[in-house]
View 1: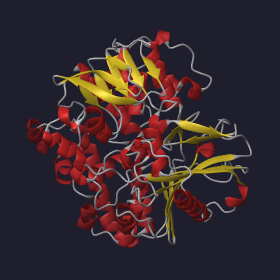
View 2: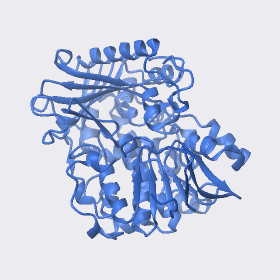
View 3: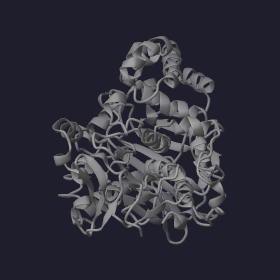
View 4: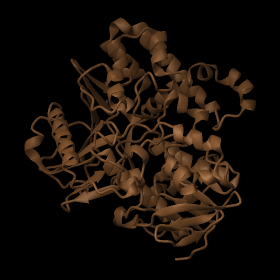
Amino acid sequence: MSTDWDAIVIGSGLGGLTAAAYLAALGRKTLVLEQHYVAGGNAHVFRRMKKFEFDVGVHYVGDCNPGGTLPAILKGLGVDDRVEWLPLDPDGFDTLFFPGIEFKVPASWDLYRQRLVETFPDDETGIHRFLDILRAVVRESGAVRLPVEPADLPRLVEEAPNFLKWALRPLSDLFDECGLGTKVRAVLAAECGDYAMPPSKTPVVLHGAVIGGYMKGAYYPKGGGQVIPAALVAALRANGGDLRTRTRVERIMVENGKVTGVLLEGGEELRAPLVVSNADLKRTMLDMVGPEHLSPATCEKIAAYRMALPIFVVYLGLDMDLRERMPNTNYWYYSSFDLEKLYAEASSGQLPEDTFLFISVGSVKDPGTEAIAPRGCTSLEIMSLVPSDYRLWSVDEGPAHGERYHRNRDYRDIKGGLTERLIDEAEKIIPGLREHIVWKEAATPVTHERYTLSTGGTSYGIELATDQFGPNRPSPKTEIEGLYLAGASTVFGHGISGVMRGGILTASAIVGRDLLAEAASGTIFGDPAKLGPPPADPWEASR
């Protein structure tokens, strides 16, 4: 392994892998360092019983239709043919359950509007106004280039008036403006779990972008979530780069205000004039760089950022097959219409009194890939938003600081109790679920911290609230020469689409070119002839 590189990327989440693959394709000798044993970050999978495969974070993705952002990014590296996007049910890619209401969300603005009016006829006028404004904000956001500079404002006043008025205001303000009732508000905001915030904190443009992306179609990658990092790793290696797993970075080395490389746990030094961190923002700047290399204002700002709420996940392998028993949809279940209460309780360190569930069934989304679950069986995940507070989980310092927690009886008790509670609630949607469980395990925020080293065990980075959105989020370039950022905490946002778009735009900031625009116009970077055949096992190819 060489000790000298043109670029080093810390963390193999999709933002870091995308940036690394493009830097390598542009001729920079690039190394990706990953502390876990497989690449992908929140997009990796794991396997159990030689029968079930579980997705950590890839449950459904928008903007994958022909001409969409993700196909363009992959095509720019010559690996678009390695990821086939399977559509979820266009008549209801999400199915929402509230007391007395079952609502299917279709991949169509017109049909979505029609169903909302049919379900809530007393709110018809407000529904029309809400959707008109939301769509205008989404449409006008195309005129915005991140990061927005003061010189852009005169143009945006003409081209994006709705965006300027509403984009960074909370979704609850728009609900109030439109005079919407309690129940329709809850249904309109039900997918807020995709960004882990209630309407009172959610920027209108964020909600519009999430829903608008899915209105073009919701998709799942054939072969499971691991095919995406595997494709990016292939492009990285084909163009002279490399991936090194089980390698934890202890320090980002800085001399005279410039990056010089990284120091690994164990003392090995790797040199590079360029470092991209896809790792947790706070650990990157405050731990790996250190306050001594940053301005006091930067340290204060980063320390003050609030992290997004984390997710508790129950992974189940079943000996019954849901492929023919349920539609190709995600289930969202709420026991109450009061979303604000749920988030307020979780944010204050309490397990919410009301129930929120998101259920994703990979073997239904990709029925032909038996590595996810063989015929006659099912692989599914049940998720809920929970507090990050260590005290709730009976943890003191957390696994990022070396704490061993697995045998902590109090930790195991609360983890086990919440697991059973979520299974009981999921049975209200999938009757008979419990009696068919042959594999069961759960992941807490502490688990997530162990594998990704994220502050608070969140997968969404810093909270995407109105006061931490857009220009208030970190841009790719830092005050240290040669140090750049990628990932969910940057200005480009979270989610599969957000971090991959952010990854290519971080690479763009480094090389001074709009690589996304070039890729969208058909440019292919690097040498696709060196890729070789697709791997038989994307998980093995990501190690």
